Length: 222
Image 1 (cartoon, rainbow, N blue to C red):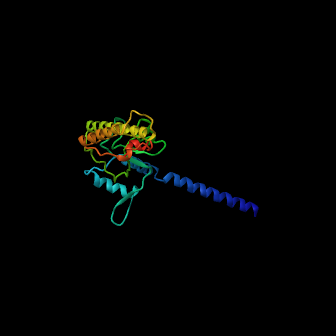
Image 2 (tube, one colour):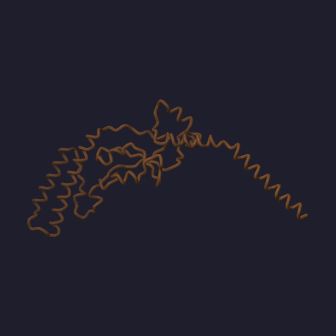
Image 3 (cartoon, helix red, strand yellow):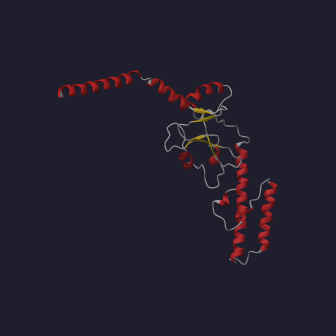
């Protein structure tokens, strides 16, 4: 009886091994590999009207879940964002506009957010926003301003920050009586100078940034 039971156990094990071997031999590994490559190729490629129909025929199979009205909610293999262009942009950030960034810690195929930040992106005062990027759905639109216009506008914003900082310093000295040489007249002149500068350059005054009790971060944000 024991001999029979032992042989049955070995037979079961052999059968299982044969089944596993058969699966490994006939499983379509190449198709899986090709499908993964197709997913990778879709990333960082905005929709083009010429090949939109081709993209849509591929994406529903493995990159999207469609609701009753046909809107694709893409299922991403990784978290991706793109940098929305801004008129107020410095040279450090311009190069990342309309670029897709990966929020993964390590990414062999795409620039990571950490790498972009280490090269100056999202510096203090940066106004850029990171928008969710859905491969096959998100279309990156053309910029409406040139790089020269962006840098020029950014210089105007920096000058506005400088004038606001002068107003804050005068207000601080007046409130704390740190300097007898500073007067209300000095404050009025500084405010008038900022007001004229904003009107001449079509800028909007930010009164909260003119107050002395403000965090360093808010000094450079809208």
